[in-house]
Image (cartoon, rainbow, N blue to C red; front, side, top):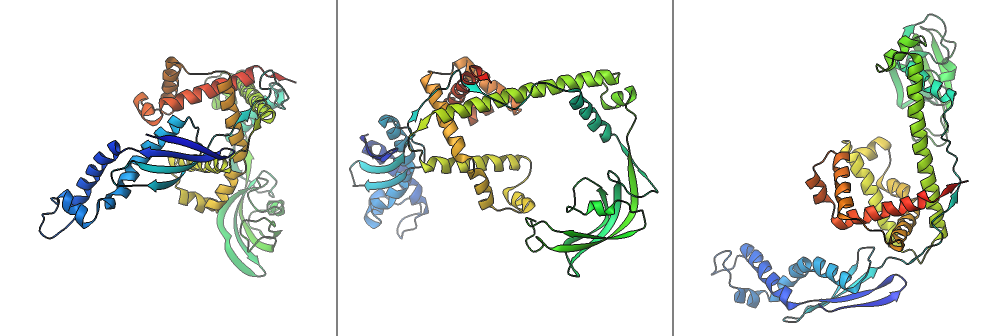
Length: 427
């Protein structure tokens, strides 16, 4: 294989390589043997057409497209490796020559990984706004949330108040005309929950079961249904029931109902305090990591970040998100239907931070390279075992999905992140 690379501009160039006849000839035979099975030619049984007759009738060149398509991926990969390039986007392929009996010549316009000029990335001083301290109020609030989860609704004769649940029928109209989605029967609405349009729930406060209330509201300007946005609407609302929330007493019995592993309210609070402390320490560590990495990226210079890298990061992020939805049983089409969005909306959403993510990845990889971080066989095996346990998969399944190069890269990157984070100090 002959390989050469000509730089055209920063991070761009043309990779020229050849595919040798030693590779072309056996692939021509394979493609011919496949193609001849579908050829009907008078005088020959199907699948038994001689090669010489095929070449005379159709020309050997009729096989070239299938042959080059089969050989190109491996040939291109080998050429990139031989040229010592780090390619970061799909190439633009141009077949220069495919002469019979000669090596074929291919040009590939490629985008290469940009140079990263690292600045300071160790011993960084960062500031974070996440506290590791847990207050009594936070513990009490968690207990109260769990207490409210055990609350029961009971019918009340008095007028509805904020926090009560009302069972209602409602019919909405704009300028006297009912609109789609503006009608409901026996709907349970907790007043103050913010489920309905701003101003709706407040107008039901003070009403009793059996009453009908005219609720006047204005749809928000940014309302999802464009035909209703900013318009005044009337909801004729009939109240069938008013229910008050009755929460259990705050005592040891409540604690045991919430968590069978405790006997007293004090034990429950102690357990919640420990959980909140662990969560806050984790959040604090995450904040320090994010701040330190962000500063390391700010201190670095990336020479002409190719737009193709950002584009590929957008699509990688989108695919990862949609695959996550798929695992939850939500198809791409269903997701767009549920959210009322389009693929263009999702693209714009993921595009917002794509450049930042791309720059961050490049800087972390550069740090790993500068520090000479590598992954041992033991570390790779441990990573595979951890992934298998996390995703409830067999070890061999993980090995089939992830190459050794990918795992070694990920481990080196983790070491770089750990270095930046562990040497940072919090102001």
